[in-house]
Structures are given as C-alpha cells and as structure tokens.
Image 1 (cartoon, rainbow, N blue to C red):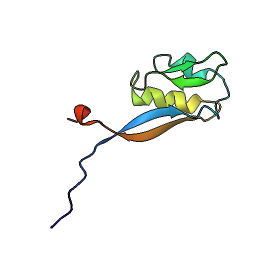
Image 2: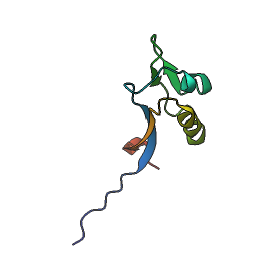
Image 3: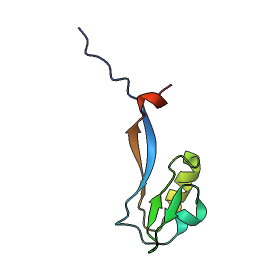
Length: 81
C-alpha cells in the first residue's frame, strides 16, 4: 500500500528579518503597497500579496541590508484551487 500523498501546495511569502534591517527605506519607498516602516524606520511587510512576485523581487534586490527574503508557506485549504 502506498503512503498518502501530501497534496499541500506551497506559495512564496515575503518576510523581513527586522534585526538585519538598516532602515534605508528602499523597500517602503519603492513598494509601499507591500512594505512599511515603523517609527524608527525598521521595515515590515504589511501586505505580502500587494504586488507581483517580480516587483517584490526588485525591492528585495534593492535592499541595502539584504534583509528581505522569500519563504515557502502552505496554502490554506480555502485558498487551494
């Protein structure tokens, strides 16, 4: 008998390592629909689906602190096709 196959689908999710953030503002200035900055300038993700993966990748490439990353996360059952 074959083990059940895991049909869990993954999606990329952007996240910021806030301890590595250098408060340059590049991400929040270039893609404010995805990134924001708190009072001290530390970046955060406020809407991970706010732009295409290509635009998010461009913001990642411009990050002075190299603190923006992709993580593979499971889609919830409600979001799976």
